[in-house]
Length: 311
Picture 1 (tube, rainbow, N blue to C red):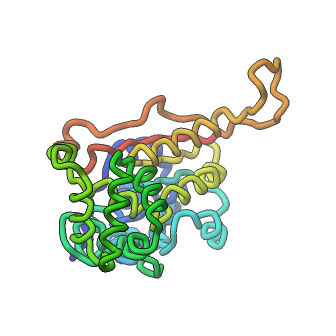
Picture 2 (picture 1 turned 90 degrees about the vertical axis):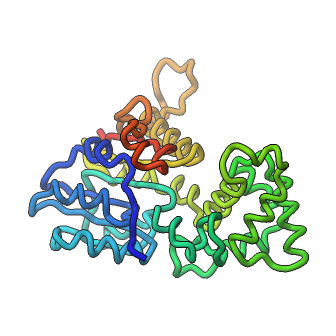
């Protein structure tokens, strides 16, 4: 299957990056190379783009798409949490802009055998990096009922988390749960019929929770943003596109802390903690898709772009 992914908030992200033709830019979530292509098309021969993705299919697709810019592009198959180390190995200590487009790609969702979607029956996989051995099947079949409840409650924000976890535990006691279809049906049975009528597919939140847990998405984001801000040159910008409230909250809080890091009590007349601001949130509110984009791409509905500028 061809790697197909519509880049969300493309125009807005490129505008907010304030690209300098001779600058060095990083795409931490390369995908099919949609955002990266637009960055590269604005770079001169002296400019450079380094792209990261842990998905081998995404790397192959991006390599093909970015061929016109050969010589100014480096593509690394790695999680963006390794960005600082990988850039250092390339002799790069500071960059002019970083982009993250979080979540799962259209390709991953639409390729049934990747096991991300609840709409088709396939092996329970959900690995963003197929080099890792643990899959969604392992989580569903080996986590305790209490652990399943925790991730479905915290990462899926599903009010039926306790009931879903119980139904999963009961079902796997009979036989292991092997496919997305089996899991989807178990979840459906855990949610009252009157509640299934609205609010989207009943399995959506649980699938999100298992995917986030498997790929450690929130921990990686939480532990990477400070490093990315430190990598920026003065005036450099970090653009992060999120797709659910858990990601957005992390980005908002870390941006706020880097803008106002002082930990002194509010009644202190002067700051004595010595923590200095590293920059500012470049937009007061997150940027969201406009009407035209929403009509063209329904998956952009929950997208939010936040931008931090280094001083």
